[in-house]
Image 1: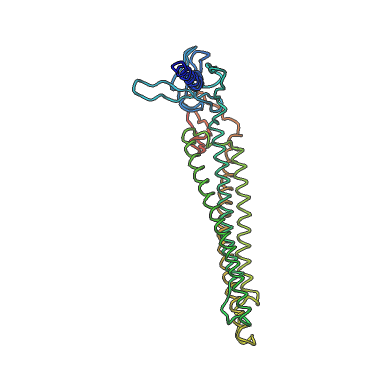
Image 2 (image 1 turned 30 degrees about the vertical axis):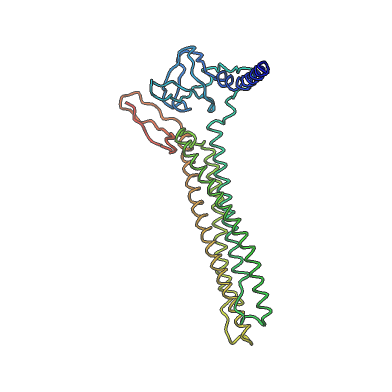
Length: 356
């Protein structure tokens, strides 16, 4: 019996060590470091050549490796006793990654597992764009469902129909339309909420990353010009369709006699007159919806048109200035100014600097 218990205990101990060894071994042996290849390797606060240098590495100096951000390695710099470690960025060309051997041949995490900040930023941009599109489609579906039910399927009073059977048929159609309206409204509202949440969450993430790396918000001028041109073209189309929608609806209701205000003397029976009154009421409802939606679309398009055009003119002015030949430098003290064009914190600055 003692021998049996001893064999069972040995088996449990062997099983525990076998299961624990990979976990502890992987955690201890999978750490990676970077080693400086030359003297004066610069560790910067942000992954940018304009970011301040927070440390210089001697040849062979090592730091703990965290990940990658574009052409930079993310490293951990030990802080003072009682203080947190600092996070820095060093060019991959100035260092090498060491300590990439794990115990027992287990796979180790590499920089490609966690996407760099540029990939995360582009992913957030796509999420923001898709969220905005879902919000527009969801809101449009709900509005169209409500408007269609009120305009096409609204039932009038019983006196507006030739008999009770016609009135009951109209009521039944309105009831069926209400069922579809509720379904489309619910689906559209859910899509609107989903898209709105994605839009604002992605926008928040983009703002956070832009605060960490301001260069993310400064796209190339060619890309900015393409975006501005697309915005101006989209604004033109929205303004045109909004104007046609609002103006066409107003003109149709005002000038088409069949949709005008009915006159009692033009109808033989009371129910025909009341039916025409009901038709006029639905026409007024449709006119209100179309003018409202068209006005919103027109204002939205006008704003996009103006802002897109303004951005294009700004970029064109920058390109003209930068294409000018460089002014001659005056070697005399207190000579002429030098023209500069630069991007600072997402803004374009054009000015003169006087040499002394």
